[in-house]
Length: 367
Image 1: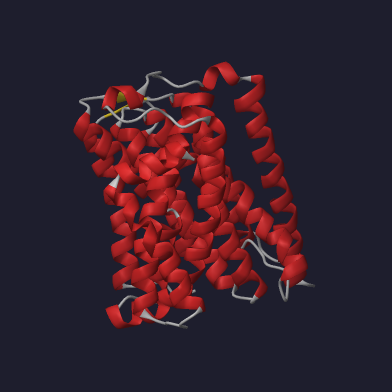
Image 2: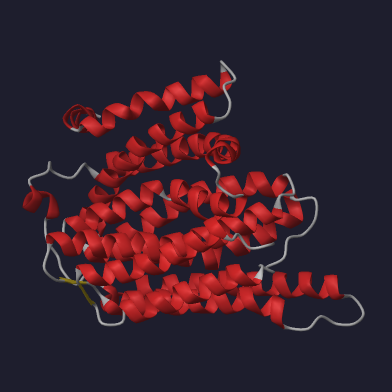
């Protein structure tokens, strides 16, 4: 705990942690609403993201960048899963699907593109393990196909709704099995292929403090993830009112704003790793998070809908959402194929993401 307290005292950004109890009190004790909760929740998520970033780097220093990226993606995606389960129990399936599609596009384009840009501005050229990126891009492509098929395959004439539900349930099981086998492949049977392209003590290079002990780092990761989930619930509840006053559409809020705030912790970790020339960690977080949402979180929500939802949820997405996920996957596959990066590649990836964001802001699709 001494190391944690020293980090809070040393880093002025972590002083914003006072907004965590502030937003919880404002929501539960004073029943504040609208823009006030929106502002407080954003101010609370920022220091939590910074704290999670440091803890993730400490875990990666002990376990390696591949496992560290997987752990960060897993804990970061718990926030999206908790929010989606809440919406699922309320029957807000459009919100659930929008958050899934938005998270996949945000993680694979904004998080990856920002990492390549920030890392490239500080280092002339960077390297990462292309095998890891290609595997995750292939898994993302499979997931996109699974999300596209329910909308393309013609329904049976007898019971079209039952057909779509049966197809979605079967695809959900297939995606979960594929994700599990992917972990077995990358972490067990072919582990040597997926090591970091560069091993270095980033903390020592950049003049930062030593990594935390592994026990403290994991404890902070778990605790901060819970706090991020609590604050994210408040954010989602207040963002609609704030968005209306700021002139933002529901599609833009769900696909862009909620996805960015929900992934704030992972974004901070990915950007920090890239700046410290640990691009394997950044790529692992960005693509690992997108892959985990597509292959694990989305199928789990389909299965959970049979128990907590008012009706089973399908994997049918509106056409523009599927198109954006497919184009994001193809962009990732092309950019990460070589295993080398410079700042302009980050600009190209971010340009694709901004194209989607501008389109949603100006002409939101009809669900």
